[in-house]
Image (cartoon, rainbow, N blue to C red; front, side):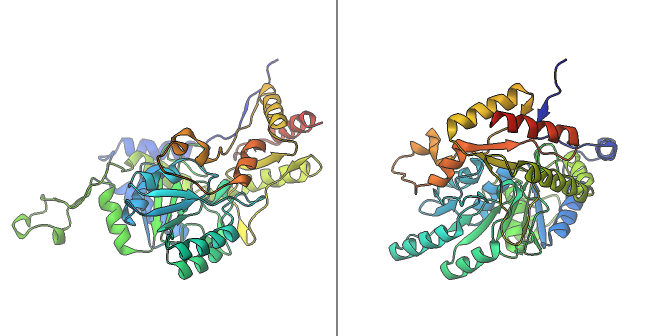
Length: 388
């Protein structure tokens, strides 16, 4: 009998989600209706931010964030090498340059001590970054309070990549409150903490950035009478102020997002239980287990483990897992190692040996709210046998 496949992640959709989507399908609006505004208000309130702007993806949200902060040729954007390429691409799409700060072992987030050293060096050379974009990898928040002290000292802007971290907290502050950042970007991809199928959200406490984000996700167009010539006083007129994109979310997605947001506490509880179970049963296995940032509560989008023994052993273990129907994954290959980034003319990146070691040894174990106890036990058993 063929064993059931255990995916590394899976969405959790129930009848309340289906009803929410059907309700919108039967309504007058499929795009640009009331659901989007309600989702934005509810999400901003959930995070503790003043504003939220829904968009078509976290990739779109990162690009919008780079744009509203004025990234362009001659500007520098620093981020983590342990991320999806969209975090770096955001700045490149604006014509800016990028570089990477290596990760710390255990949290696998940007090493803030190393960042501080690099900032001191950059200040001496008068080449400080315009933006630092920390990534809350696997849902484990970066120490944003420490980063805020560096931001005040060196004057850079902060864009949080919270694609993994919806609902996570740092020292009692919800990720997305923007207490220690200018902007925070979330993903609602199918396997994220909550889903809209595809979709994203940006939170901020700046009215100016909020207004600009809203324009730029809709081609740079506004109907605000303050920005129209006096001759175009009627409400059917509009004005284009800048080059924007079509980065809008649909009403269908927003309805699903609102329904999912109501269940986020339950989703978190289940993810925490699975993570605790892995931690308990894998302590005696030759693996490096994830370590949370001090003061953090992770959303546990991923449960990353590192195989002690190098890349060949990791690959053998991964193959053994897959043959057993456990579809573990790899997150992430270091962004600066991709051919596209290596071949950029005149570009030389800071060394990232920890991120390279991580990529050679990491395995993302299955974790999702509907995962049963028997599935967790099977993952642990197969992993233990593979490492003997």
